Length: 503
Ligand code: BES
Ligand code: MN
Ligand code: ZN
Image 1 (cartoon, rainbow, N blue to C red):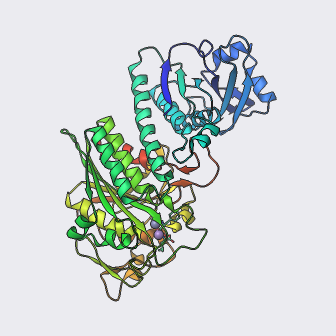
Image 2 (cartoon, helix red, strand yellow):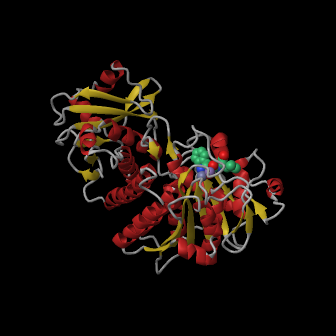
Image 3 (spheres, protein in one colour):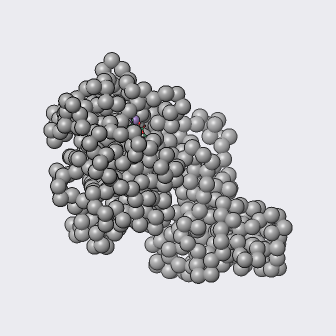
């Protein structure tokens, strides 16, 4: 991964391939953001004018390159837009996005000096995170020739402007780096093709990571153990695949834990729909259907690396949903972990089946809170679009907390209801419940189904990340095409909130 460090040299004196400055939209046109002063001096005070002449406005997402004048060690100046000019400091998300655009634009370069408004530790962390996320590329599946053709990510970022030996700034770089490392791990998992990432290989990756970290314990239930334990949901979804399912427990504990949280992730390594097969046009991106498990896994590792005083257990419900002679049929009844029975009327509503088992299992350990994360419904994408996830819960205050923490961490989220009248249509004529309900409000129906499996006394929230998990459009800000790692920052923020004694 790219390396970020703090530099006490001025951006003018740094030996680098480019100096990055930020610009914004002022009332009378483009303005330079703090941090750009030394660069502007090298332009004899005309940098804003030069950039304006080149068509720059300071809009978010903008990136304009200018050859550097004498006086700067670097040969190139890159100006990135922050959006509207701010009098009292730039929002963390604007800084993340601008740093991300800069890192993405400088792909193929070795080193850049970031002369951005790094006013305080919050800003330094935002710049670090944005740069490391923006620099991300996925090259694991390219041949050596293919790798040589592709531009390498920006190798080094020197953030200027922070004071020498500023402990808070150093800690900010460290925290930003940990979160970026883990988000990029979650992105890698989503981007891995489903012939490489399947339940067993995902479980093996988790086991290896657990050994590397030391303070995370990983336990894997294979098909035999799942059968013995009666995990009918995970087994029912996985039974059509040649690759058997797994339930992985990833546990981090702290002796001075302030709270216990369970994170549950939907880990469908490929969702073909099963016998209720998805039509062409709906299955090309379905390797992303394990993004919830990827986010849960990565966030537990991030919490462990940060050493937060909280207990966090991640549950990865891993299966491949395939049609075959051994697949679950529409009409089959599954006996879920804990004993409830479910009539499967549509095998494409498989996420709720694997999650139900994992939620019941997570509840047995009596955590204070369960948060599940899942690419659960197309209906949620219809409702909220491709950049916002829906938040449902069995507690209004907790739903509010989760939604606010998500927004503050840079992950657009929106509170959604669980209307009681949508439960009736899920009644089954043969089993306790069916996995299908009313079509309208399908995201809420799925949430209501999951709620049935949450034990009394546990506060629960459900994040439906079907929209933002996978970016099918052009890259923007620090978000590349493909896996985005959405929900990782929300889960880490929740763990921090709990560690602060605020839950
Ligand atoms: N994995 C899909 C949901 C999804 C859709 C994720 C688009 C990412 C992007 C899920 O398993 C699914 O197929 N849901 C069905 C449920 C329906 C059959 C009740 C859906 O949303 O159509
Ligand atoms: Mn499905
Ligand atoms: Zn699915």
